[in-house]
Length: 204
Image (cartoon, rainbow, N blue to C red):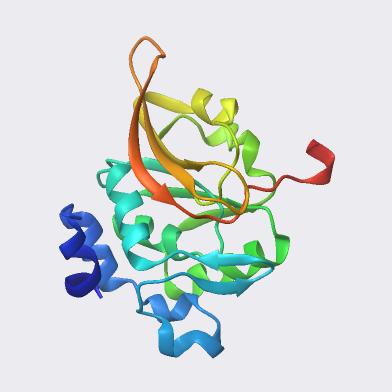
């Protein structure tokens, strides 16, 4: 998977590549899709959610610019695969999932496989303020704007990697970097298609 799908698309971070080789992706997909576990396309995981294609997981991980020991927040735990990649890379990982059933399943799965990840069921829009600040925040669903609380929870120099765009259409993947003056530098990482960013009814 790594040699055929990831390296040819110019992902070069050695920590990312090692983690992609070590983390057993088939553990994070439903049984009916086991035969497609290592193919380069997203797969359904239930509740209208998906596990992202391997290349995109690697690409987004690389653009978080992390090193072992860094603190990272993931919005959209899903099956737990992205969180496992970060944990394998040696990060302190916090992950929030809006679907309680998926959060519980991912937490149990990650624990069973030995990945140290703190998982919370809830609305990811507000982030995880008591664990902030973060060296990076990654969002695996697409809102129509950048959630301000996530910007506020970045360390100076921290990165936010997030798809932004309308539901059901092509979105843009952005890397935002917070400078020492609390200004955001942005980098367009290309076009993507993610499930929509949803919020809890109480927050709307």
